[in-house]
Image 1 (spheres, rainbow, N blue to C red):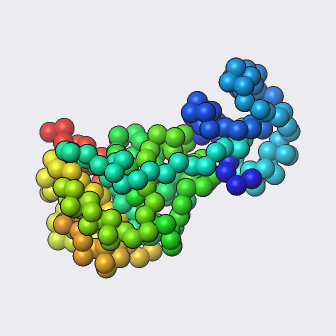
Image 2: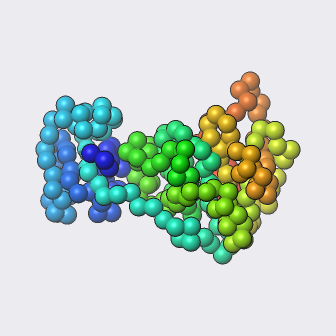
Length: 232
């Protein structure tokens, strides 16, 4: 199976959005009733079959074959004012991508942009970690991140990157503007070329002995800092 969703939240949201082509479930009368009502083909299977189909992932008794994950164009996520877009520069871990998608959905971000090559893409693990949020977040896949950032700037966006060696703290920027938050890869951070396109580079104070944050945690802090600033 190329495209699947598993786990209750991911399955239910995909079902609600009409993307499940065939379902594989344990004996769950509520879900089976929904599948019948929506005229979705399904098969009642045992746990061993679900373990096999999900490659021993935490399927929670539900798995569905789904249509292709929808991607969007840059124009679909642009706003005239107070836009919020997250750009991922070389992220590799699907768990981080899934967590960032979930945070973006909760915070009402306009979309996520990532590179087509040399980075993690939307897959079943990402969908599971996103816990249904993937159905509602606009994901844009691009071939050239630097050119995309330049286009965002041409459309009135200001670009904020994060780096531990930056001079300014993350909470000292005026975020009442169209804002792009750039999150770097887990091991290398933001690339030099992307960093050169950032209007601001900011840091998050580190008080402990570990001098970096998980990429999804850093993204969450930045996203909610923007929301907090705009609510002042």
